[in-house]
Length: 126
Image (cartoon, rainbow, N blue to C red; front, side, top):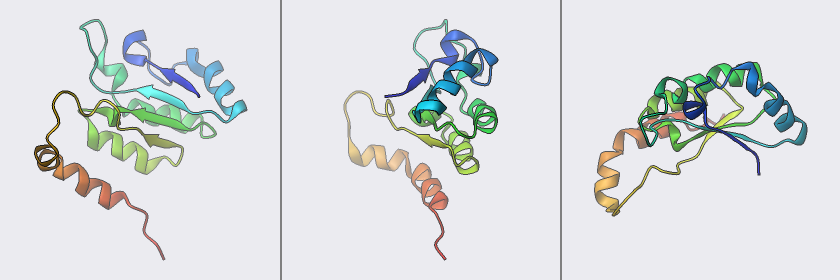
């Protein structure tokens, strides 16, 4: 268990001081903070707060907190990958990327670029 932040629905960036007590709590108990990123349901959310690039500032301000970019920032997958590559304390989940009927071949075909990107992010040994 951890904490989940819905910045796009609360209309606050994840680096907003409002969240500091929650991040401090997560750090104290070594719990992750999941950030809802990417597209939202309903028109009352604000995309500028749910963009995965906003996680970079919070991750830099609270390096002792493990952040999780939920939904890999869909549709901003390359931006989310850049934040993950830069910050050791940021990971991602892939929930919500698949909805409705699932055809693996079509899905793999559409996401070929994402797989190449992930291969490039793999740790280099040596």
